[in-house]
Length: 177
Length: 154
Image (cartoon, rainbow over all chains, first blue to last red; front, side, top):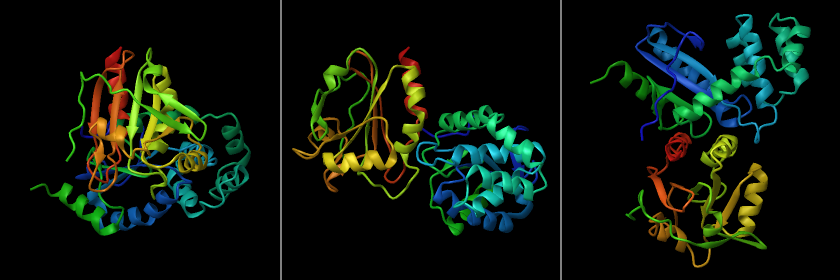
């Protein structure tokens, strides 16, 4: 049973880096999960090392029973994404994992130049709940086994959450033997 | 290395504590699919481990009327605290006395370590194993295999 990313990365995904990069790293993550918080700087490190050889994609996998703020945090990232600021919000959320109440989320939106009233309304109306649910369902289908779960060129990465180990796996994927 | 019971085998019946005052007999769960999730120990250091994921996927399992049962060699009080801390909405069974007997019956016991393997079984409504999976050491299985097996039961 090899866990494969399903569906593959497409235009609906949030991506950093060139679409034709030889390696695509996909993270299924939860903005309130401490392990995802630990992964955040590790991903930044490998992105710096790989440069244009890496495309990074983030999909939501909120563990809502463990993390009461995770669902709204995921939705707020998507709300920001509507205005082209997904990655700015992604970074803010991971840098403020201890302050994810709804009023914090709206304040982060305002700080990014997003109208706070419309951001708050989108949260209340759950405009992006379905989108987050689609991400979650795709994660289940892909074999996500915890958060964070990474996929490298579609195959689940079961290695260590460590910059050296992750970078080795990415370099190997970029230069298959 | 133990040999995992495979598809087509009638699931060995058992009765295990599901809490300080309650027992569960597998045969009483006939009539709907059952997912048995053997795992090494409560309080694994990973917060987002397989049981946490399965807990989130319960509504999907319920669409197939499937019941999820977690099984490890931990005792009932340990299970109770663990389930409460993780807000699990499914039963954890204590394969505690005699230690690991049920895990052994399913070929899912690591005698050298003294705990259960990470192993999954999907049982049909008649109590026959229709899918089983042994995870490599240190790798949590996802829910994808379980859902594919449940889909195949239909």
